[in-house]
Image 1 (cartoon, helix red, strand yellow):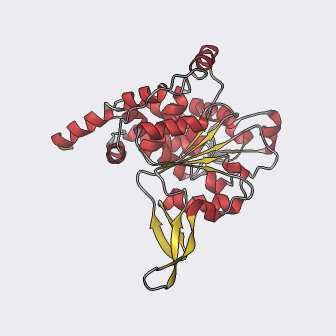
Image 2: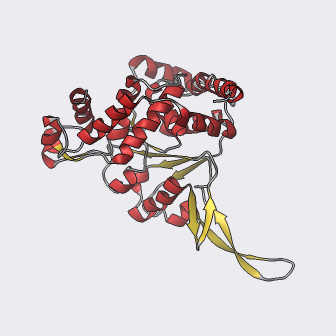
Image 3: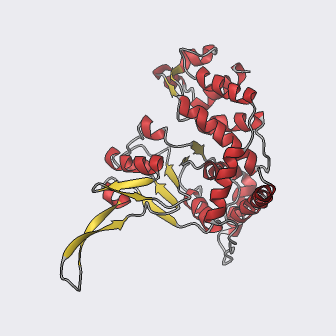
Length: 327
């Protein structure tokens, strides 16, 4: 890496703690979830947020977009939402000079840097599938024409775990498109007390812009250059393969697992481990990066059998056993 580029990258990495500090002005607690969303951004992937109502999922995403000066759009998913409501549609226009009519593509809310897909499991599969091309290809196709999405591009989808009536669970193919599956927990007693104090008055914190879109793209490029040893890549490979009941050395996985993670999980774990290193101002991956990120990366890529669900065994429990069994 050239000296000039190295100095530039170090300057950008030094801004990441400032970015977390700005987000912390509005979002109290939830530090682990904030870190994981930023990891998804650095890795160039998308994430699924799950938490009960009222945990500031929408506010967290909007605050991050404000601190990054990124264009933010929110899509409220409902049972009657159509693909055109996300991607866009053609509108009949008229040329005032010639009088000729033509179709003009009117871009939908997917054309933004940060897109919040709120309650994505409340819309039918046809509309959910409209997100697939955008998430994977960073473009949408309408009437045979490709339209590139802005970069950087991040989709953050949310879903509530407790409301099952009128929901459409995401199919496995779409779940696998999400780099991270992040679970938000209730705040601690002190954090909740601070929330009550700081959000019920007249004071509104002003956020500073910490990083530009060009700087984020540079950080994404840096993330891929972070060093990871062959031993750690081998560990990731064995960990992912061990999640498959037929290949697993763990009797726990063989007993409770239906099927395990595919190769995309290994790719995600390598890339996100590099992103976590950058977020912590390091240029090399350590085992802690992998062990911490194994949960949000594998929890939506492992399926448990019916007996496990009946016994209350969770995917997080399976991942914990995996980390114990794979040395």
